[in-house]
Length: 555
Image 1 (cartoon, rainbow, N blue to C red):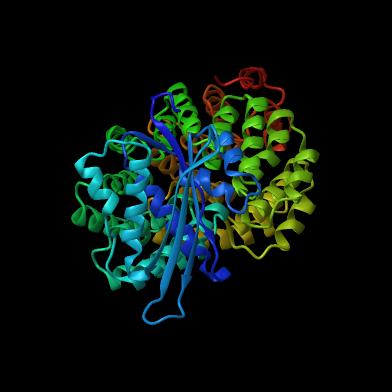
Image 2: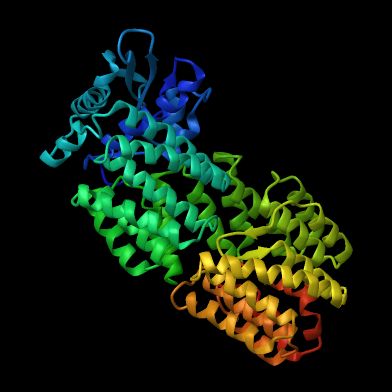
Protein backbone atom coordinates (compact mmCIF):
# COMPACT_ATOMS: atom_id res chain seq x y z
CA UNK A 1 0.00 0.00 0.00
CA UNK A 2 0.99 3.64 -0.25
CA UNK A 3 2.03 5.85 2.64
CA UNK A 4 -1.37 7.55 2.40
CA UNK A 5 -3.02 4.22 3.19
CA UNK A 6 -4.53 4.17 -0.30
CA UNK A 7 -4.49 1.06 -2.46
CA UNK A 8 -2.02 1.28 -5.33
CA UNK A 9 -2.82 0.08 -8.85
CA UNK A 10 -1.03 -0.06 -12.19
CA UNK A 11 -2.84 -0.38 -15.52
CA UNK A 12 -0.51 -2.32 -17.80
CA UNK A 13 -0.50 -1.57 -21.55
CA UNK A 14 -3.28 -3.57 -23.23
CA UNK A 15 -1.88 -6.17 -25.58
CA UNK A 16 -3.00 -5.59 -29.16
CA UNK A 17 -4.28 -8.85 -30.68
CA UNK A 18 -5.21 -7.14 -33.95
CA UNK A 19 -2.92 -6.10 -36.82
CA UNK A 20 0.25 -4.16 -35.83
CA UNK A 21 -1.19 -0.90 -37.18
CA UNK A 22 -3.81 -1.03 -34.39
CA UNK A 23 -1.08 -0.58 -31.77
CA UNK A 24 -2.11 3.07 -31.25
CA UNK A 25 -5.65 1.90 -30.43
CA UNK A 26 -4.46 -0.47 -27.68
CA UNK A 27 -2.18 2.23 -26.24
CA UNK A 28 -4.90 4.87 -26.38
CA UNK A 29 -7.40 2.59 -24.66
CA UNK A 30 -4.89 1.83 -21.89
CA UNK A 31 -4.43 5.52 -21.32
CA UNK A 32 -8.18 6.18 -21.24
CA UNK A 33 -8.78 3.46 -18.63
CA UNK A 34 -5.83 4.79 -16.60
CA UNK A 35 -7.12 8.34 -16.59
CA UNK A 36 -10.63 7.27 -15.56
CA UNK A 37 -9.26 5.39 -12.55
CA UNK A 38 -6.88 8.24 -11.73
CA UNK A 39 -9.84 10.45 -10.70
CA UNK A 40 -10.59 8.26 -7.69
CA UNK A 41 -9.55 9.73 -4.33
CA UNK A 42 -8.96 6.42 -2.53
CA UNK A 43 -6.65 4.92 -5.17
CA UNK A 44 -3.10 5.73 -6.21
CA UNK A 45 -2.68 4.97 -9.90
CA UNK A 46 0.82 4.62 -11.32
CA UNK A 47 1.28 7.12 -14.17
CA UNK A 48 1.05 5.83 -17.72
CA UNK A 49 4.61 7.05 -18.36
CA UNK A 50 5.74 4.52 -15.76
CA UNK A 51 3.39 1.75 -16.93
CA UNK A 52 4.30 2.18 -20.62
CA UNK A 53 7.77 0.82 -19.85
CA UNK A 54 6.28 -2.67 -19.44
CA UNK A 55 4.95 -2.93 -22.98
CA UNK A 56 6.00 -6.32 -24.35
CA UNK A 57 7.81 -7.05 -21.08
CA UNK A 58 8.70 -10.66 -20.31
CA UNK A 59 8.11 -10.13 -16.57
CA UNK A 60 5.04 -11.67 -14.93
CA UNK A 61 2.40 -9.32 -13.55
CA UNK A 62 3.50 -10.30 -10.03
CA UNK A 63 7.12 -9.29 -10.83
CA UNK A 64 5.98 -6.01 -12.37
CA UNK A 65 3.73 -5.35 -9.38
CA UNK A 66 6.61 -5.91 -6.98
CA UNK A 67 9.01 -3.76 -9.02
CA UNK A 68 6.50 -0.90 -8.96
CA UNK A 69 5.48 -1.46 -5.36
CA UNK A 70 1.76 -1.74 -6.20
CA UNK A 71 -1.02 -3.79 -4.62
CA UNK A 72 -2.98 -4.52 -7.81
CA UNK A 73 -2.28 -4.99 -11.50
CA UNK A 74 -4.94 -4.54 -14.18
CA UNK A 75 -3.95 -6.16 -17.46
CA UNK A 76 -5.63 -7.35 -20.60
CA UNK A 77 -5.92 -7.55 -24.36
CA UNK A 78 -7.84 -5.77 -27.09
CA UNK A 79 -8.80 -6.63 -30.63
CA UNK A 80 -10.71 -4.39 -33.01
CA UNK A 81 -12.32 -6.51 -35.67
CA UNK A 82 -13.28 -4.17 -38.49
CA UNK A 83 -14.56 -6.86 -40.85
CA UNK A 84 -18.21 -6.97 -39.72
CA UNK A 85 -21.07 -4.61 -40.60
CA UNK A 86 -20.74 -0.97 -39.57
CA UNK A 87 -17.63 0.11 -37.70
CA UNK A 88 -16.91 -3.38 -36.45
CA UNK A 89 -16.66 -5.12 -33.12
CA UNK A 90 -14.17 -4.67 -30.37
CA UNK A 91 -13.21 -7.29 -27.81
CA UNK A 92 -11.52 -6.21 -24.58
CA UNK A 93 -10.46 -8.63 -21.84
CA UNK A 94 -9.39 -7.42 -18.42
CA UNK A 95 -7.95 -9.16 -15.39
CA UNK A 96 -7.35 -7.72 -11.95
CA UNK A 97 -4.52 -9.35 -10.02
CA UNK A 98 -3.64 -8.95 -6.35
CA UNK A 99 0.16 -8.84 -6.20
CA UNK A 100 0.65 -10.08 -2.61
CA UNK A 101 -0.61 -13.61 -3.33
CA UNK A 102 -0.75 -13.46 -7.16
CA UNK A 103 -4.54 -14.09 -7.12
CA UNK A 104 -6.76 -13.20 -10.05
CA UNK A 105 -9.60 -11.51 -8.21
CA UNK A 106 -11.66 -10.57 -11.26
CA UNK A 107 -11.70 -11.20 -14.99
CA UNK A 108 -14.15 -10.21 -17.70
CA UNK A 109 -14.28 -10.03 -21.43
CA UNK A 110 -16.38 -7.51 -23.34
CA UNK A 111 -17.55 -8.12 -26.90
CA UNK A 112 -19.17 -4.93 -28.10
CA UNK A 113 -19.88 -2.78 -31.05
CA UNK A 114 -17.07 -0.22 -31.37
CA UNK A 115 -19.68 2.50 -30.69
CA UNK A 116 -19.84 1.17 -27.14
CA UNK A 117 -16.13 1.68 -26.47
CA UNK A 118 -16.71 4.40 -23.84
CA UNK A 119 -19.34 2.36 -22.06
CA UNK A 120 -16.82 -0.50 -21.85
CA UNK A 121 -14.13 1.81 -20.39
CA UNK A 122 -16.68 3.04 -17.84
CA UNK A 123 -17.77 -0.49 -16.89
CA UNK A 124 -14.18 -1.62 -16.42
CA UNK A 125 -13.49 1.35 -14.16
CA UNK A 126 -16.73 0.72 -12.19
CA UNK A 127 -15.87 -2.94 -11.77
CA UNK A 128 -12.38 -2.15 -10.45
CA UNK A 129 -13.81 0.25 -7.85
CA UNK A 130 -16.26 -2.44 -6.76
CA UNK A 131 -13.58 -5.16 -6.49
CA UNK A 132 -11.27 -2.86 -4.50
CA UNK A 133 -14.18 -1.75 -2.32
CA UNK A 134 -13.62 1.96 -2.97
CA UNK A 135 -16.08 4.65 -1.99
CA UNK A 136 -16.92 6.69 -5.07
CA UNK A 137 -18.15 10.26 -4.73
CA UNK A 138 -20.72 11.66 -7.15
CA UNK A 139 -18.43 13.87 -9.31
CA UNK A 140 -16.00 10.92 -9.55
CA UNK A 141 -18.81 8.64 -10.70
CA UNK A 142 -19.59 11.11 -13.49
CA UNK A 143 -15.94 11.08 -14.56
CA UNK A 144 -15.82 7.26 -14.58
CA UNK A 145 -18.73 7.14 -17.01
CA UNK A 146 -17.77 10.07 -19.23
CA UNK A 147 -18.12 10.02 -23.03
CA UNK A 148 -15.32 12.17 -24.40
CA UNK A 149 -16.98 12.30 -27.86
CA UNK A 150 -19.84 10.74 -29.78
CA UNK A 151 -17.80 10.82 -32.99
CA UNK A 152 -15.75 7.66 -33.49
CA UNK A 153 -13.65 9.03 -36.31
CA UNK A 154 -12.70 12.01 -34.16
CA UNK A 155 -11.80 9.63 -31.33
CA UNK A 156 -9.70 7.48 -33.64
CA UNK A 157 -7.73 10.54 -34.88
CA UNK A 158 -7.22 11.58 -31.26
CA UNK A 159 -5.78 8.18 -30.28
CA UNK A 160 -3.43 8.23 -33.31
CA UNK A 161 -2.30 11.76 -32.46
CA UNK A 162 -1.29 10.79 -28.92
CA UNK A 163 1.17 8.28 -30.35
CA UNK A 164 2.85 10.94 -32.53
CA UNK A 165 2.92 13.51 -29.70
CA UNK A 166 4.68 11.00 -27.44
CA UNK A 167 7.30 10.16 -30.06
CA UNK A 168 7.86 13.87 -30.70
CA UNK A 169 8.50 14.47 -27.02
CA UNK A 170 10.83 11.48 -26.59
CA UNK A 171 13.01 12.38 -29.58
CA UNK A 172 12.65 16.19 -29.62
CA UNK A 173 11.16 15.75 -33.11
CA UNK A 174 9.18 18.67 -34.53
CA UNK A 175 7.78 16.67 -37.46
CA UNK A 176 6.10 14.21 -35.10
CA UNK A 177 4.47 17.13 -33.27
CA UNK A 178 3.16 18.40 -36.61
CA UNK A 179 1.60 15.01 -37.39
CA UNK A 180 -0.09 15.04 -33.98
CA UNK A 181 -1.36 18.60 -34.56
CA UNK A 182 -2.80 17.59 -37.96
CA UNK A 183 -4.73 14.64 -36.50
CA UNK A 184 -6.00 16.62 -33.51
CA UNK A 185 -7.14 19.45 -35.76
CA UNK A 186 -9.17 16.88 -37.71
CA UNK A 187 -10.58 15.49 -34.47
CA UNK A 188 -11.86 18.88 -33.27
CA UNK A 189 -13.27 19.72 -36.70
CA UNK A 190 -15.28 16.48 -36.55
CA UNK A 191 -16.37 17.23 -32.97
CA UNK A 192 -15.97 20.87 -31.88
CA UNK A 193 -16.83 19.89 -28.27
CA UNK A 194 -14.13 17.22 -27.87
CA UNK A 195 -12.39 18.50 -24.72
CA UNK A 196 -9.58 15.90 -24.50
CA UNK A 197 -8.58 16.55 -28.10
CA UNK A 198 -8.34 20.30 -27.45
CA UNK A 199 -6.33 19.65 -24.29
CA UNK A 200 -3.85 17.41 -26.14
CA UNK A 201 -3.68 19.97 -28.96
CA UNK A 202 -2.79 22.73 -26.51
CA UNK A 203 -0.13 20.61 -24.81
CA UNK A 204 1.41 19.54 -28.16
CA UNK A 205 1.75 23.17 -29.28
CA UNK A 206 3.27 24.03 -25.90
CA UNK A 207 5.78 21.15 -26.07
CA UNK A 208 6.95 22.34 -29.46
CA UNK A 209 7.29 25.87 -28.06
CA UNK A 210 8.98 24.86 -24.82
CA UNK A 211 11.56 22.52 -26.38
CA UNK A 212 12.65 25.43 -28.58
CA UNK A 213 11.51 23.73 -31.79
CA UNK A 214 9.12 26.57 -32.64
CA UNK A 215 9.12 29.67 -30.43
CA UNK A 216 6.99 31.74 -32.81
CA UNK A 217 4.10 33.96 -31.74
CA UNK A 218 1.82 31.94 -34.04
CA UNK A 219 2.65 28.74 -32.16
CA UNK A 220 1.87 30.38 -28.83
CA UNK A 221 -1.34 31.86 -30.20
CA UNK A 222 -2.48 28.41 -31.41
CA UNK A 223 -1.81 27.00 -27.94
CA UNK A 224 -3.74 29.87 -26.36
CA UNK A 225 -6.78 29.33 -28.60
CA UNK A 226 -6.85 25.61 -27.74
CA UNK A 227 -6.57 26.37 -24.00
CA UNK A 228 -9.37 28.97 -24.22
CA UNK A 229 -11.61 26.44 -25.93
CA UNK A 230 -10.91 23.86 -23.20
CA UNK A 231 -11.70 26.41 -20.47
CA UNK A 232 -14.93 27.33 -22.27
CA UNK A 233 -16.09 23.72 -22.70
CA UNK A 234 -15.06 22.41 -19.28
CA UNK A 235 -14.41 25.24 -16.85
CA UNK A 236 -14.55 22.98 -13.77
CA UNK A 237 -12.50 20.09 -15.11
CA UNK A 238 -9.10 19.73 -13.38
CA UNK A 239 -7.50 18.76 -16.72
CA UNK A 240 -8.70 21.99 -18.21
CA UNK A 241 -7.15 23.90 -15.31
CA UNK A 242 -3.90 22.03 -15.86
CA UNK A 243 -3.91 22.98 -19.55
CA UNK A 244 -4.13 26.61 -18.47
CA UNK A 245 -1.35 26.10 -15.91
CA UNK A 246 0.94 24.60 -18.57
CA UNK A 247 0.24 27.60 -20.79
CA UNK A 248 1.26 29.92 -17.94
CA UNK A 249 4.33 27.76 -17.25
CA UNK A 250 5.76 27.26 -20.76
CA UNK A 251 4.04 29.97 -22.74
CA UNK A 252 4.02 32.92 -20.35
CA UNK A 253 6.68 31.67 -17.90
CA UNK A 254 4.51 32.88 -15.07
CA UNK A 255 5.74 30.24 -12.64
CA UNK A 256 4.00 31.59 -9.53
CA UNK A 257 0.50 31.48 -11.02
CA UNK A 258 1.11 28.14 -12.71
CA UNK A 259 2.34 26.68 -9.42
CA UNK A 260 -0.77 27.88 -7.56
CA UNK A 261 -3.02 26.09 -10.03
CA UNK A 262 -0.95 22.88 -9.91
CA UNK A 263 -1.00 22.80 -6.11
CA UNK A 264 -4.74 23.46 -6.03
CA UNK A 265 -5.50 20.68 -8.53
CA UNK A 266 -3.20 18.30 -6.70
CA UNK A 267 -5.52 18.48 -3.70
CA UNK A 268 -8.51 17.23 -5.73
CA UNK A 269 -6.59 14.96 -8.11
CA UNK A 270 -3.71 13.42 -6.16
CA UNK A 271 -2.99 11.00 -9.04
CA UNK A 272 -2.04 13.55 -11.67
CA UNK A 273 1.68 13.58 -12.57
CA UNK A 274 2.80 16.42 -10.32
CA UNK A 275 6.44 16.40 -11.30
CA UNK A 276 5.82 19.91 -12.65
CA UNK A 277 5.49 21.27 -9.12
CA UNK A 278 9.15 20.41 -8.54
CA UNK A 279 10.20 21.81 -11.92
CA UNK A 280 8.49 25.13 -11.24
CA UNK A 281 9.91 25.49 -7.74
CA UNK A 282 13.34 24.98 -9.24
CA UNK A 283 12.73 27.78 -11.75
CA UNK A 284 11.66 29.99 -8.85
CA UNK A 285 14.99 29.23 -7.15
CA UNK A 286 13.58 27.07 -4.31
CA UNK A 287 16.13 24.34 -5.03
CA UNK A 288 15.79 22.24 -1.90
CA UNK A 289 11.98 22.27 -1.98
CA UNK A 290 12.05 21.50 -5.69
CA UNK A 291 14.35 18.55 -5.11
CA UNK A 292 12.08 17.15 -2.40
CA UNK A 293 8.99 17.57 -4.57
CA UNK A 294 10.66 15.72 -7.46
CA UNK A 295 11.80 12.87 -5.21
CA UNK A 296 8.29 12.60 -3.77
CA UNK A 297 6.80 12.48 -7.28
CA UNK A 298 9.33 9.81 -8.25
CA UNK A 299 8.23 7.65 -5.31
CA UNK A 300 4.69 7.77 -6.73
CA UNK A 301 5.83 7.29 -10.34
CA UNK A 302 8.96 5.17 -10.08
CA UNK A 303 9.20 4.52 -13.82
CA UNK A 304 8.86 8.12 -14.99
CA UNK A 305 11.97 8.64 -17.10
CA UNK A 306 11.71 12.43 -17.26
CA UNK A 307 11.61 12.72 -13.47
CA UNK A 308 14.77 10.65 -13.06
CA UNK A 309 16.44 12.82 -15.70
CA UNK A 310 15.32 16.08 -14.08
CA UNK A 311 16.52 14.94 -10.64
CA UNK A 312 19.86 14.20 -12.25
CA UNK A 313 19.97 17.73 -13.68
CA UNK A 314 19.48 19.19 -10.19
CA UNK A 315 22.53 17.24 -8.98
CA UNK A 316 24.53 18.55 -11.96
CA UNK A 317 23.50 22.11 -10.99
CA UNK A 318 24.80 21.42 -7.47
CA UNK A 319 28.05 19.98 -8.79
CA UNK A 320 27.16 16.54 -7.38
CA UNK A 321 28.28 14.49 -10.35
CA UNK A 322 28.19 11.04 -8.78
CA UNK A 323 24.54 11.43 -7.75
CA UNK A 324 23.81 12.88 -11.19
CA UNK A 325 25.36 9.80 -12.81
CA UNK A 326 23.28 7.43 -10.63
CA UNK A 327 20.01 9.15 -11.58
CA UNK A 328 20.94 9.15 -15.27
CA UNK A 329 21.65 5.42 -15.10
CA UNK A 330 18.21 4.99 -13.55
CA UNK A 331 16.57 7.09 -16.29
CA UNK A 332 18.28 5.09 -19.04
CA UNK A 333 17.42 1.81 -17.39
CA UNK A 334 13.76 2.90 -17.59
CA UNK A 335 14.04 4.09 -21.20
CA UNK A 336 17.40 3.49 -22.92
CA UNK A 337 16.27 5.60 -25.91
CA UNK A 338 15.56 8.81 -23.99
CA UNK A 339 17.80 11.22 -25.89
CA UNK A 340 18.24 14.02 -23.33
CA UNK A 341 19.43 11.57 -20.68
CA UNK A 342 21.87 10.01 -23.16
CA UNK A 343 23.23 13.46 -24.01
CA UNK A 344 23.71 14.51 -20.39
CA UNK A 345 25.46 11.21 -19.62
CA UNK A 346 27.84 11.89 -22.53
CA UNK A 347 28.67 15.37 -21.17
CA UNK A 348 29.23 14.29 -17.54
CA UNK A 349 32.93 13.33 -17.88
CA UNK A 350 33.53 16.78 -19.35
CA UNK A 351 31.64 18.61 -16.59
CA UNK A 352 33.04 16.53 -13.75
CA UNK A 353 36.68 15.97 -14.77
CA UNK A 354 37.24 18.02 -17.92
CA UNK A 355 37.71 14.70 -19.73
CA UNK A 356 37.16 15.76 -23.34
CA UNK A 357 38.15 12.41 -24.87
CA UNK A 358 35.71 10.40 -22.78
CA UNK A 359 32.86 12.79 -23.59
CA UNK A 360 33.80 12.77 -27.26
CA UNK A 361 33.60 8.97 -27.43
CA UNK A 362 30.14 9.08 -25.81
CA UNK A 363 28.88 11.94 -28.02
CA UNK A 364 30.02 10.05 -31.13
CA UNK A 365 27.83 7.12 -30.02
CA UNK A 366 24.66 9.25 -29.67
CA UNK A 367 21.86 9.09 -32.24
CA UNK A 368 22.56 11.69 -34.95
CA UNK A 369 20.60 14.92 -34.54
CA UNK A 370 21.15 18.65 -34.14
CA UNK A 371 22.37 18.59 -30.57
CA UNK A 372 24.70 15.62 -31.19
CA UNK A 373 26.29 17.57 -34.06
CA UNK A 374 26.55 20.75 -32.02
CA UNK A 375 28.32 19.10 -29.06
CA UNK A 376 30.67 17.26 -31.42
CA UNK A 377 31.68 20.72 -32.68
CA UNK A 378 31.95 22.19 -29.14
CA UNK A 379 34.28 19.38 -28.04
CA UNK A 380 36.62 20.01 -30.99
CA UNK A 381 36.68 23.71 -30.03
CA UNK A 382 37.53 22.81 -26.42
CA UNK A 383 40.41 20.66 -27.69
CA UNK A 384 41.62 23.66 -29.69
CA UNK A 385 41.17 21.64 -32.90
CA UNK A 386 39.63 24.58 -34.74
CA UNK A 387 40.28 23.12 -38.17
CA UNK A 388 38.51 19.90 -37.18
CA UNK A 389 35.64 21.94 -35.71
CA UNK A 390 35.20 23.63 -39.11
CA UNK A 391 35.22 20.27 -40.90
CA UNK A 392 32.52 18.98 -38.53
CA UNK A 393 30.34 22.02 -39.34
CA UNK A 394 30.89 21.70 -43.08
CA UNK A 395 29.63 18.13 -43.00
CA UNK A 396 26.31 19.12 -41.38
CA UNK A 397 23.07 19.97 -43.18
CA UNK A 398 21.36 21.70 -40.23
CA UNK A 399 21.04 25.48 -40.51
CA UNK A 400 20.82 26.06 -36.75
CA UNK A 401 21.18 24.33 -33.39
CA UNK A 402 18.22 25.05 -31.10
CA UNK A 403 17.81 23.81 -27.53
CA UNK A 404 15.65 24.99 -24.64
CA UNK A 405 18.05 27.83 -23.78
CA UNK A 406 20.32 28.47 -26.77
CA UNK A 407 19.87 28.95 -30.50
CA UNK A 408 23.10 28.92 -32.51
CA UNK A 409 22.91 29.46 -36.27
CA UNK A 410 25.41 27.21 -38.08
CA UNK A 411 27.14 30.30 -39.51
CA UNK A 412 27.72 31.71 -36.02
CA UNK A 413 29.38 28.45 -34.93
CA UNK A 414 31.64 28.55 -38.02
CA UNK A 415 32.46 32.22 -37.38
CA UNK A 416 33.53 31.45 -33.80
CA UNK A 417 36.02 28.86 -35.14
CA UNK A 418 37.42 31.38 -37.67
CA UNK A 419 37.68 33.92 -34.83
CA UNK A 420 39.81 31.45 -32.86
CA UNK A 421 41.97 30.96 -35.99
CA UNK A 422 42.16 34.77 -36.44
CA UNK A 423 40.85 34.40 -40.02
CA UNK A 424 39.00 37.73 -40.05
CA UNK A 425 37.71 37.78 -43.66
CA UNK A 426 36.15 34.32 -43.48
CA UNK A 427 34.76 35.11 -40.04
CA UNK A 428 33.01 38.24 -41.34
CA UNK A 429 31.51 36.40 -44.30
CA UNK A 430 29.82 33.86 -41.98
CA UNK A 431 28.77 36.53 -39.47
CA UNK A 432 26.84 38.36 -42.18
CA UNK A 433 24.96 35.16 -43.00
CA UNK A 434 24.30 34.51 -39.30
CA UNK A 435 23.01 38.05 -38.76
CA UNK A 436 20.51 37.73 -41.64
CA UNK A 437 19.31 34.35 -40.31
CA UNK A 438 18.84 35.77 -36.79
CA UNK A 439 17.00 38.86 -38.06
CA UNK A 440 14.53 36.59 -39.86
CA UNK A 441 14.14 34.41 -36.77
CA UNK A 442 13.54 37.49 -34.59
CA UNK A 443 10.70 38.58 -36.87
CA UNK A 444 8.90 35.34 -36.07
CA UNK A 445 9.95 35.17 -32.40
CA UNK A 446 10.58 38.71 -31.17
CA UNK A 447 10.42 37.70 -27.48
CA UNK A 448 13.01 34.92 -27.67
CA UNK A 449 16.04 35.64 -25.45
CA UNK A 450 18.05 32.89 -27.18
CA UNK A 451 18.02 34.89 -30.41
CA UNK A 452 19.05 38.15 -28.73
CA UNK A 453 21.94 36.36 -26.98
CA UNK A 454 23.21 34.97 -30.30
CA UNK A 455 22.74 38.32 -32.02
CA UNK A 456 24.89 39.85 -29.27
CA UNK A 457 27.68 37.42 -30.17
CA UNK A 458 27.36 38.24 -33.88
CA UNK A 459 27.74 41.97 -33.11
CA UNK A 460 30.64 41.43 -30.74
CA UNK A 461 32.62 39.42 -33.30
CA UNK A 462 31.93 42.22 -35.79
CA UNK A 463 33.37 44.68 -33.24
CA UNK A 464 29.99 46.46 -32.78
CA UNK A 465 30.33 47.12 -29.08
CA UNK A 466 27.17 49.10 -28.24
CA UNK A 467 24.88 46.82 -30.23
CA UNK A 468 26.42 43.72 -28.67
CA UNK A 469 25.81 44.97 -25.13
CA UNK A 470 22.29 46.04 -26.03
CA UNK A 471 21.34 42.56 -27.33
CA UNK A 472 22.98 40.87 -24.35
CA UNK A 473 20.98 43.12 -22.00
CA UNK A 474 17.68 42.33 -23.76
CA UNK A 475 18.33 38.61 -23.28
CA UNK A 476 19.11 39.18 -19.58
CA UNK A 477 15.94 41.21 -19.05
CA UNK A 478 13.76 38.64 -20.78
CA UNK A 479 15.05 35.83 -18.59
CA UNK A 480 16.62 37.20 -15.38
CA UNK A 481 17.98 34.74 -12.81
CA UNK A 482 15.60 36.29 -10.26
CA UNK A 483 12.62 35.10 -12.31
CA UNK A 484 14.09 31.89 -13.73
CA UNK A 485 16.85 30.29 -11.68
CA UNK A 486 17.15 27.43 -14.15
CA UNK A 487 17.49 29.16 -17.56
CA UNK A 488 18.57 32.59 -16.32
CA UNK A 489 22.28 31.81 -15.78
CA UNK A 490 22.66 31.03 -19.49
CA UNK A 491 22.21 34.73 -20.35
CA UNK A 492 24.64 35.87 -17.67
CA UNK A 493 27.20 33.57 -19.34
CA UNK A 494 26.41 35.03 -22.79
CA UNK A 495 27.11 38.47 -21.32
CA UNK A 496 30.42 37.25 -19.87
CA UNK A 497 31.37 35.98 -23.34
CA UNK A 498 30.52 39.34 -24.93
CA UNK A 499 32.76 41.07 -22.36
CA UNK A 500 35.60 38.60 -23.00
CA UNK A 501 35.61 39.08 -26.76
CA UNK A 502 35.61 42.88 -26.27
CA UNK A 503 38.62 42.52 -23.97
CA UNK A 504 36.64 43.78 -20.93
CA UNK A 505 38.18 41.16 -18.66
CA UNK A 506 37.24 42.65 -15.29
CA UNK A 507 33.59 42.93 -16.34
CA UNK A 508 33.69 39.33 -17.60
CA UNK A 509 35.09 38.23 -14.23
CA UNK A 510 32.28 40.02 -12.39
CA UNK A 511 29.78 37.94 -14.42
CA UNK A 512 31.74 34.73 -13.80
CA UNK A 513 31.86 35.43 -10.06
CA UNK A 514 28.08 35.69 -10.05
CA UNK A 515 27.71 32.49 -12.09
CA UNK A 516 29.90 30.29 -9.90
CA UNK A 517 27.86 31.31 -6.86
CA UNK A 518 24.67 29.90 -8.47
CA UNK A 519 23.47 26.35 -9.05
CA UNK A 520 23.79 25.90 -12.81
CA UNK A 521 24.22 23.14 -15.37
CA UNK A 522 26.23 25.35 -17.75
CA UNK A 523 29.66 24.31 -18.99
CA UNK A 524 31.43 26.40 -16.34
CA UNK A 525 32.39 23.81 -13.75
CA UNK A 526 35.87 24.13 -12.27
CA UNK A 527 37.24 21.49 -14.68
CA UNK A 528 35.66 23.22 -17.66
CA UNK A 529 36.95 26.68 -16.74
CA UNK A 530 40.45 25.19 -16.49
CA UNK A 531 40.45 23.68 -19.99
CA UNK A 532 38.25 25.99 -22.10
CA UNK A 533 40.55 28.09 -24.36
CA UNK A 534 37.92 30.84 -24.31
CA UNK A 535 39.07 31.87 -20.82
CA UNK A 536 42.81 31.80 -21.67
CA UNK A 537 43.26 35.60 -21.35
CA UNK A 538 42.19 35.36 -17.67
CA UNK A 539 44.58 32.58 -16.62
CA UNK A 540 47.05 34.87 -14.78
CA UNK A 541 44.42 36.91 -12.99
CA UNK A 542 44.17 36.32 -9.20
CA UNK A 543 40.41 36.96 -9.50
CA UNK A 544 40.15 34.08 -11.96
CA UNK A 545 41.95 31.78 -9.50
CA UNK A 546 39.28 32.70 -6.93
CA UNK A 547 36.55 31.95 -9.48
CA UNK A 548 38.06 28.47 -9.96
CA UNK A 549 37.99 27.85 -6.21
CA UNK A 550 34.38 29.06 -5.95
CA UNK A 551 33.30 26.84 -8.85
CA UNK A 552 33.74 23.61 -6.91
CA UNK A 553 30.30 23.06 -5.32
CA UNK A 554 27.03 24.93 -5.83
CA UNK A 555 24.76 23.69 -3.10
